[in-house]
Image 1: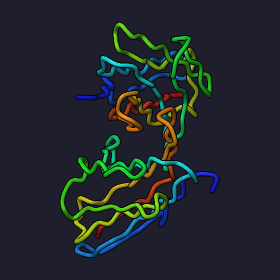
Image 2: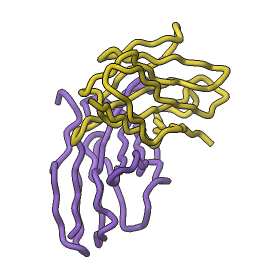
Image 3: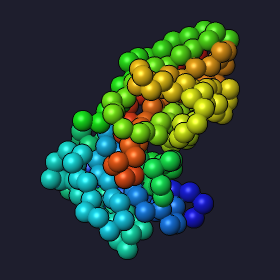
Length: 112
Length: 114
């Protein structure tokens, strides 16, 4: 596609449920990033995929969070047993080279 | 450790006044530097970037930034702000020795007052 696509744009879920957030990067981009932006906060790095290398998972806040990237393209961020503090906007970005990262519009997750 | 520091979390400024948003990074190697803008309820879009060459970089909407290697800074400036500039601004850096990883600051909320 022309840009980074994220779905859904909004997600409301009940506490304790699992959620999956999807990111479709720009075609050909080898790097993919997930960030979390809580209300009034900056960007919190979650995970980084680069080609076929092992992902950098150092930003995942707990073992309830996981992400995968299939075929070097689409990525899914999974949050298990959601908690209210997981409510945030989850942003995905992709890049081909370290000269610009392109962001999606984000998924706004609300845990009630 | 690699890091980006945005010293001001909130900057209020009157319309048509100048503004400077500060950004410092930690590095002893070559860097690429970026400013992104996030308007309310939108994703991030690139405002400008420094890759090499002239240390003064001009971006969209009349913004510019100056790369200062000795001070490891990349401050964003605009000589006269408009109401429409109200947004969150993020400074970011990528290091040429760490592949494609981008590091972001915590953001500066710019509010333009009529």
